[in-house]
Length: 335
Ligand code: SF4
Ligand code: SF4
Image 1 (tube, rainbow, N blue to C red):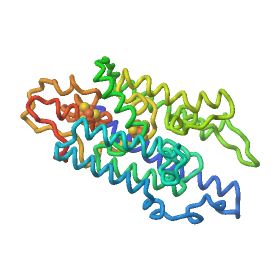
Image 2 (cartoon, rainbow, N blue to C red; image 1 turned 45 degrees about the vertical axis):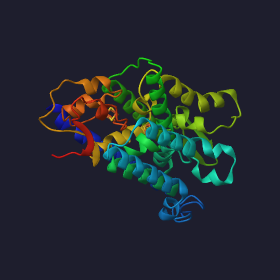
Image 3 (cartoon, helix red, strand yellow; image 1 turned 90 degrees about the vertical axis):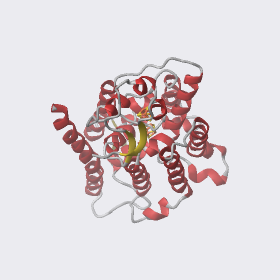
Image 4 (cartoon, rainbow, N blue to C red; image 1 turned 90 degrees about the horizontal axis):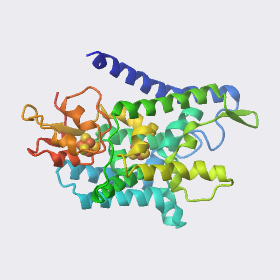
């Protein structure tokens, strides 16, 4: 009962903080450079507008992939083969293709990565590529079920593929409690905000103080930028989060999403009001919990309880296919 009253306001405050920090960053920047306004090439007014970005192949294909996935989920046609195909396409398009040096794929690069879109906005204010990236992520999450993370994000996609491979190899995966992963994810986010705003660790560039961005050192998306960094330490920070993510994905479901990713955190807040999600047919459930036992995530037990805060659901379809009486499906929650 207490959590029912406390959690929604806490989440709303976090969302409000997230949305207000970029505004503060922009105001601060303008204060630092009075009269100069936004620097050329950086301000929203200086470059292409929202729809110029949104209509680029990267975002159009993201919306198409998400729409295809949603239709397959809602019509119960999402099977392993189609799932693998969609996940491979997302991994290739948004993760690998930009490294091939082919002109056709240059626009598909994950720049800004979802993490950069969120964290650089907090550090430096909203810029148009960040705004569009965040708008697409938020839109797809509101539609649901967490459609960006579940079928579009290349880091999410590769972890999902590894989870499927681990199942094939019969590797027993651990299912850490959601409160553990959420606590770690929130603490990292708070540490990031603290370091960004106190700038106690920073570099100085010209007359600007640039605070350390904690996520720059733990960003698994960097692993898709296959380029050698200047120093050994740079290479370590660049590739290690991705390598560790791939490794741990064999032993726990989507470790980077649940434990680290700020987009995972933000979309977990938003998915609570998502339109489409896993729903159960009321009253018919016998509480046998076979779906929860088969599922790789901590969400199913909370969905069955109609909990206020449901852990991240990545629409993997294990629980919807795992109910012996076919009582779980993707649909609209009726309240
Ligand atoms: S939580 Fe982060 S890494 Fe995971 S799928 Fe979402 S954006 Fe990608
Ligand atoms: S098992 Fe069910 S609740 Fe868990 S991620 Fe998969 S579809 Fe979502």
